[in-house]
Image 1 (cartoon, rainbow, N blue to C red):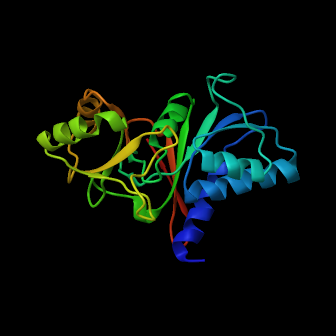
Image 2 (image 1 turned 180 degrees about the horizontal axis):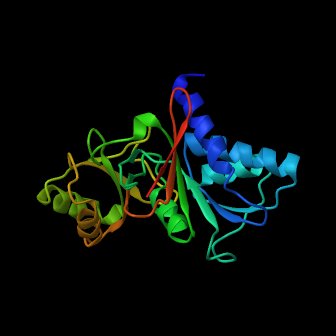
Image 3 (image 1 turned 90 degrees about the vertical axis):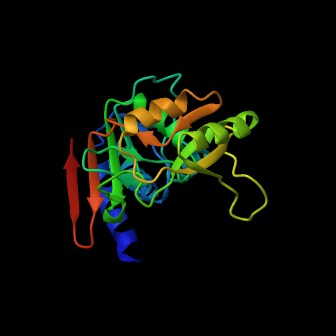
Length: 229
């Protein structure tokens, strides 16, 4: 296991300690969250922890089932006690860029439904400025793709349609949409950019999570740091 994987696992194990018996929680997506899901499954089996989870992607859904986590929906529980998720970038104010895993829209919905959003990352995800060496994922309705790309270019962004890893065509989200990975360079006003992008017809959601995270567990080479608002 590389130091990064070890760091992600340690951060995940610490974050899971926030889960209490009876909680209904959001289950984010990605490799770091996978460690948290595994630990939640262990606590259910060994500690008789009673919780319900709301998964943010099909991949998370399948992993949660495999780990023995009982699942529910926002229809049944529109307000969640806690959401645990990863991030692609975290700045000093706990603003985030998410979505390189493709689940940004469902992740933002679940985070918005939660009383608290806890982020788990390794220290390479920390940044002084959002957008530095990091594209911004934007989920787009396929029908609107040409329009959205043109509008984003006019805003100064450089959009690139995400493709499947095997090169067989565009990447398609769990919602049936496309993702544009947009290079805006350093994002000086993330809240304004998020609002401007969502005013473009056909933009479903952006990977900017502004003012949503309460706490971040950051795995380093030796320990876990806790960042708070």
